[in-house]
Length: 306
Image (cartoon, rainbow, N blue to C red; front, top):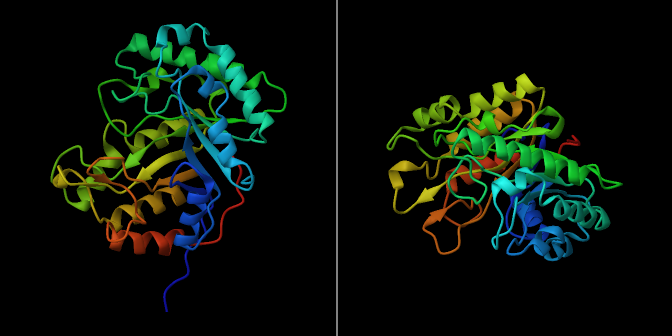
């Protein structure tokens, strides 16, 4: 007889696509309902950020799920960190807050300018001056969104588990503007060709890894959050990722359970047109890890609130 799963004491969810129906299908697959779901808005123009109609329409009728919304600092058609740091864009985030409250999403977990310590986003931080501007921009955005009557948003400050030479702490906006300390964690190697045990040890101990996040959160009196985490297959770099790695799933579950974790959302999606794979539900991609995930996470949901 197999052991019953241990019910998470944190909120457990997923990003499985741009709609709550995909996310709930993931809950059915794992055998335990989800409570949170990460999502991303269209951001070609300021209007799409200020009034994310497509996203909010998709989420109508799913009030039982807590939305973790990834919010860009500015759209693809223009903007910069210096202007954001002065509050030049505050009006758009005030409008966004009105849109969320009006759509019944006043409890949204807001993930502003995520993974800012990587080179992949418009709001990337590469030096101390940019880090200071990022922190100032964050304070402006939070202040603007909190000014709207009826809101009770939570704000997750969310670097990536990586080291591109900038200390993420330099971009921290201050405890009054943050509700949880996030980290995006994928089963990748900083050093190619490590064993499962060494790869996990690296994820914990590298300069801005899991241990750093945990200590930073304790120092600031905040819970942990993991808006993205997951397995990785990469056809071009097979020795740099964990692949079908059930040990990673066990380690992450134990980490959530033994730390003050507010929520975690597994990233169950594959990049469009890419050779990498993250989707644990995709048939044959991660069979051993999928079985481990379902055993550990397929339990009754937590009632915890962030």
